[in-house]
Length: 461
Image 1 (cartoon, rainbow, N blue to C red):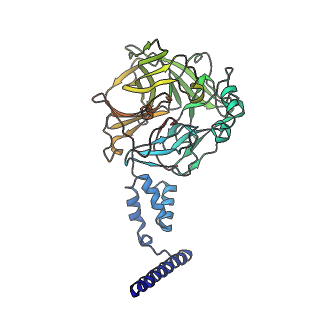
Image 2: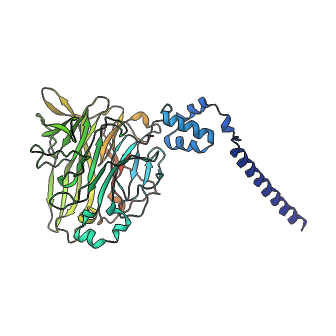
């Protein structure tokens, strides 16, 4: 009985002492007195520490104490102290009909992070430029629009919805005001119009930033903030990839081995900027393009050895590269249920990458594609929204090797028996021409409602 009483009294004393400590800390904080050791750490030493931290730990340091928060906020605003360079993150979007949250996958520590705030759900990402993402928001993707399934899927009354495009920095949470609101319906075919790739010449906060986008179905947006590129020179062409170098937009079709379209953007003298169009013919010898089709009797078409086109620029040398990705897939020729109208899918076997070829554009008495087998000390990151070179020195934990292509594609396929087979993530070595499939962490399993992933370089705005 005596032992129990002592224990009871001891617990009361410990609880009272904890309450006193909490009250003391609140009082000292209210009076502007910092009781932690971090307040006595010299600012110069903190700067040395910050330079060696990755961006997620850099941001976490703001939560240590009030004094650190002020120092780090000042360093971010002045951009005098930058976090340690690191590999890009992969934006793992979910389909607009899914209730899961969008998250980021870090290759360095194999962890996933959720953006703060988490309003990226049910949005689409169609590009990234340094620390910024190009987001697409359509009212038809919101939960309240799901209730009107009859008009949304059958009658397709998309005209009631608009698509809003804007730049967003998920690290700082800064969202630039949208200057573009595009009607969901555009053109005579009454098909929805949306961007599937957007590129920029610089960060959007720069006054000289030039933004270009590829629209679906060949229809341009009618919004006044965009200048549509039309005319006899581009009529009938379906562009697969674009890139901007020195205010020139380079665009390629499936016939990239034969010509490139170049649009030289001039200064605006009125409401719209003007441009000059040039068809840049590729001289011989040209890269051989692989295309093979096999039609089976059961109504499924198997496509093998078909190459998709991607463009990437070297920001230092201003050299343009063409990436040819060899893929295979199978799709229904005449599906009973038009899944492509609902989730852009009629595949029975999702797309898979079998290999890559790289060419750079050289001008020697004309334009030529010259095949490249070595990037040097660089790593190429690829997705459907664009490509970017990253120095191999950023790979401080030896997650990847130099002279490789790290690709991330996600193809809709409701008919796949295993949902993880829809993911086409891997690393292609230009040195030995092999592909290693990337193993995903278990805390982010693949579902049938994942959307296209995008590589993103985390940074402050």
